[in-house]
Length: 439
Image 1 (cartoon, rainbow, N blue to C red):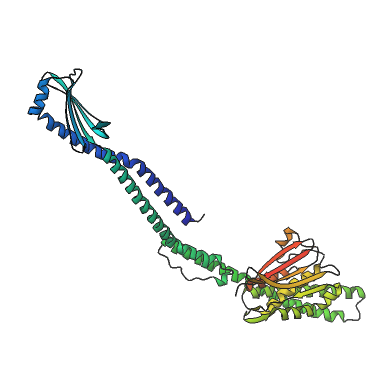
Image 2 (image 1 turned 60 degrees about the vertical axis):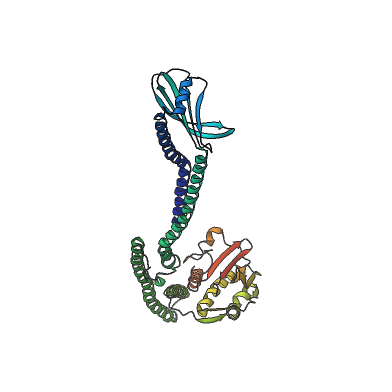
């Protein structure tokens, strides 16, 4: 999972936790604030009422001394009420406490916050009840709760989007470094040392470190290829000298047949060594981008020439060749290198084809990409061998002639032209599919 997605998920979870905590804690916080305010108001009303116990109306209630009688007062909308009545039992300590109760007043039931006050006036114990309607407050609490949660939810959503875009903005240089300097760099020579613009010192440092590392890699790569080229060139000179000496020596009439056979065998070995060196030089030149790739290539003509060159080998095995290049696809590349690429693959197909075998060359389109496939009717290649056949000096069958460089050269040429070689094989034969990039 990418770091930007991990950050987005983390931010979403933390914000969700905040919303849940607020949803459950808001009612408690609001109720505490509201109830404290109501309690203070009820205490104030209690003090005012106690200070007016000598009013005529209350005094009449006390003088009647009727234990069943209650002094009551209600507001018009039943938002508040006050009741004073004689206690059924005596008590020595004055006591004030609050509670929430439902009361029915004039057939209308509401929930109230009620102050109870036990006190003694004269020789009589009284209980004072002062209530404040909290039904509307509970509705208001729910509305406030819902409003705040919705507000916070919207805030969380928009901050989440803002964080996502900000993280995307912060990580943009990182993905530019990955794409421009690592992912799509095929060779050290094609590496782009242009600094990636970034507001983050971390990514600037990463960019600098990668540039420094690639400078060292490029230098080592260059030295390695130069070493191969130098060694190859230096080996060709003594090979040419040895070959010339052997050719002169074989013309000596004093040599017997055994000596001539040994010299002929040595000449073949020198020719093989020269061919290997030339192939390594070819690979080195391709990897050093020493070839132009600006020729327009007609694949139908290319295969006509190629099959003409291999006509003797095809006739020797009586191989049935089917060439179906029907699409007018023109590709810009190096005709000589592409000729070598297809030559090596077709030679392999002929080599591993049985007598009276079949060779099919056709083109087509797959996922909008042009391809050319070369298939044979040979014994096939094992799954383990398929992953190794493009390595240098790898031979599928040791008994066959060759140096194991043909397919390695084909792979190098394909990489030079940004082509993809896909190999599939079974007991009925092998198919080499070369896919070309979109125009």
